[in-house]
Structures are given as structure tokens and as C-alpha cells.
Length: 150
Image 1: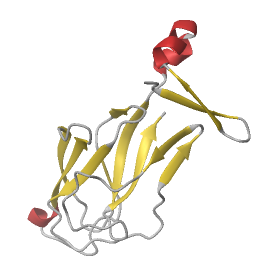
Image 2 (image 1 turned 90 degrees about the vertical axis):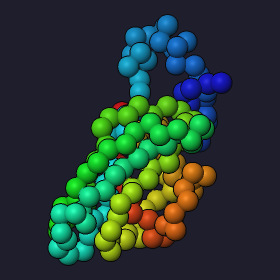
Image 3 (image 1 turned 30 degrees about the horizontal axis):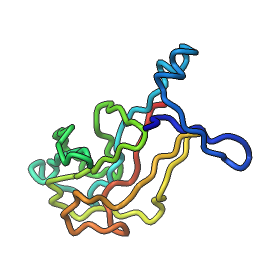
Image 4 (image 1 turned 90 degrees about the horizontal axis):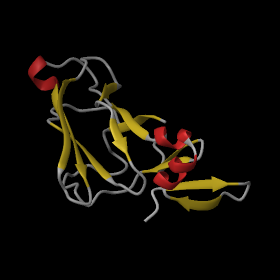
């Protein structure tokens, strides 16, 4: 199975490759990776007690269902954007579920989220997760965006 896809030309023809084979011919491919840098979460509308601002961000590997990251945070009382998550390497064709647990407040909900994000020739897609068992819907989600290092 290939782990790199290049989209080439004006018609965006997909060319699949193995990163290790590319790296054997050029050192530039040794460092080719994508890292999840942060999540941007919609924060609460209004003031909250400190106990109501605690939340946990968990990231699950969709293929195994295993938790690969769990971090505790405290949201800002007035903020609508919260940046979270330590760097996490993201590989091609690997799917994750991001769960925000402990939300005890009414949060701002955006309407401008997109089903995919493109950086140069890299596309990150967002889909409904098989591991999500909450009542959060696509229209009323809490995750406003992500930041990645390329």
C-alpha cells in the first residue's frame, strides 16, 4: 500500500508512491511528514466557574479504536477559540476520531466548516467517525478547525 499521493498537473492526476522508495533517491523525502499541531475549539459564551471550564481532548485511532492521545485543558472564560494538542504525526490514509469530553457549557457553534482542507498537494478530509457515540452533529460540532505542520 502506498503512503504518499502526489496530485500533478492542472487535472490533479493522482500518482501514488512509497515514501521509503522516494527517500532512497532524494533526502528531501526523509523529512516529508504532516503533524497535527492544534485543534481550535469553540469556547463558552460567557463566564464560567473554573470547575466548569475543564475539558479533555482524546484522539482515537479509527482502525483500532485505541486512544493515542489524551490531554486535559481548561478553557478560557471568554474565548471562542481554544488551541490544544501536542504534535501528532498524521500519515496518509489514517483516520482519527477527535473527542472533546467534559463540555459543561453552552458553546458557540460555527457554520463555516469545510469537509476538506488543502495545503499545497496535501488534502485532509473530515468525515463522520465510526467511534463517535455522542449527540454532536456535523452542523452543531465543537471543533472549529485544526492546524497542521507540513
